[in-house]
Picture 1 (tube, rainbow, N blue to C red):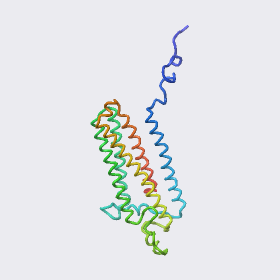
Picture 2 (picture 1 turned 180 degrees about the vertical axis):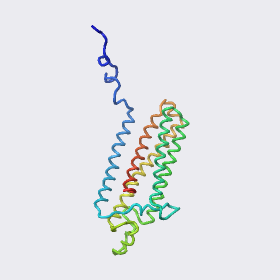
Picture 3 (picture 1 turned 90 degrees about the vertical axis):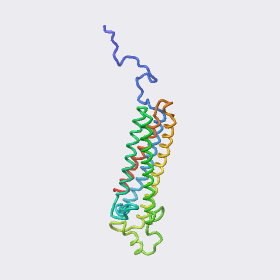
Picture 4 (picture 1 turned 45 degrees about the vertical axis):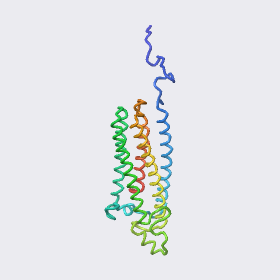
Length: 245
């Protein structure tokens, strides 16, 4: 009789006595995923509400007519160019974050510092561009609880003020809803980007102080990288909902 023991019958060592645990993840990384999932629900609720309001109205603002300027360069005739630049900057900052994480896996402090600096710069440029866009729209008359026709009396005056932003029928309510939701959702996202920049600066400081060298791991860079990639991914949806659809 053969006494050979098959692989399935061998006793395996480990916390579960079942080989490698499928949940063999660092605690902080799991908590970051939990936070990102919960935050995704919040952004989803905002965007679903925006979509519901948009399709419940008989007409809606044309994004190509609202976002057709490059502040400081061109007042009109350049639809979605400026926001395209913003999007490119944010996506490239995600690339530099990937490179920072990869350098951390190789324990390359110099490269982590270099790519984290580029990531922080990308985030600052994006937030700066968003502030410029907000300022420009505010000068046009858009703000929380306001649109370019707010305060005007008479249907004709309201229609004339809003005509540049609509393709078909004109709706004061639709313009007001667009203004409220645009500043709320992009502001909420900008807040997340600002928090991400702060976290990246903290990680950069810890790297320069050799904190991760002493720990022997750059796992914290990867955890903050998860947050940064999430912020970038959310912007793709915000960009699609507000600027493209």
